[in-house]
Length: 488
Image 1 (cartoon, rainbow, N blue to C red):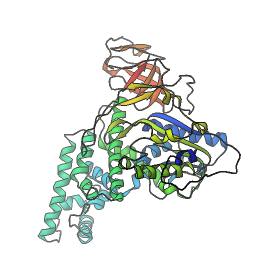
Image 2: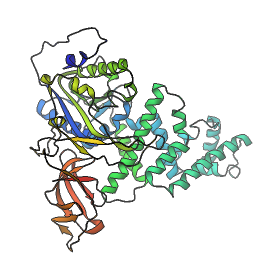
Image 3: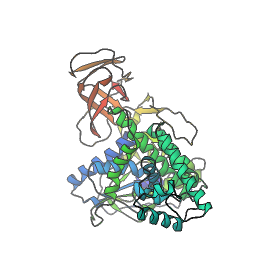
Image 4: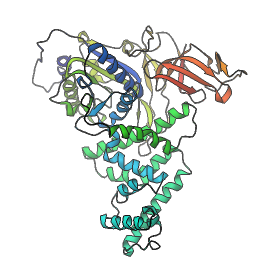
């Protein structure tokens, strides 16, 4: 498979990589509705293959093109209680720019959070050095107060600093006060964006276009994606008011696990394709094999750079000793909106004799992307996505290639406001403008993929449906906010 891929490069030294092992399984290509479902497909596959192949966790590697992709994968692995390590890097919430942003989030909610305050009082640099910080800590402890109280009233706390330092402390205090004021006016995603922008973090990491800063920008964008995704999913579950503190409580579980037992050796390896050079694993997953991601959007104007991206995928495929799986998502949460992500051109370069392709790539039908908030620092880029149809056969919850609607079935966008009500709290059907949703109805969710309605509760605006999704498990959705289509 790797040979058939790299043969498409014009600028290459001809080579034929071979193995002395017996012929093994074909390379498998799997399609997912979204990056969210893709993460669950991979984690489910790892759990399944560990049982069927008797491999250890450290026989598995998940490779991705950019560091920012690890967040969704990490969350999916944690929810399956699968241990993992980030090779040659740090877990998403342990990266410096992410910890800085979270510290500002925490300060906005609680300015008495001393660990957060000490982390960012001079980031971005504002002339408040270690000497001033030491004086603040000493005054706070000696007067049994908080550092924030000393900053708020330095003269009353007898803080021995000059007027220049007093002005710098006042500037910092005004910033935090401004963010706290915004917290009372804006919804959580807007607040998170405001904090990133006004704190100076975005300006700091956008000062140049070095690879390091580009990676930091991608990570910050992914953090904001995480905030929006968290709020959207909570809204669909019926929790209309989601605060920034709710998000922090959720990710605190992730950071607690990041600080877990480092002596545990049996872990799935997560890494970028660049970092994987020279390594081999029995079971390899290559995720996000999509246009604008792999190949990177920044390489698309140069044939030479496209060939370099193809070489990277060649490297990724040849890391696998026994099984190799490529996955792509048909929609991905990027730059603050759900956008279409067509499969990578490189998938077409693979010789079909050696690859198990998803059936849905053979037939295409239009499907409209549901667009949410966009990232504030980029121009709006409305896009359309498409959906490949596949024979709808096995509907077992076990991990398997993505199952889309049967050919000929129509996807109907649901107007989720019920038009009729019943007096029972548990129903078997609910009327919508698009038709009936009842127990057993097959739906296609924008983030969770295909699922079957198993229960309907309450009426009117409180109507909820319980859905058993093929890859992400059981979810309860508030009908008026749920983003899905009915598979007729």
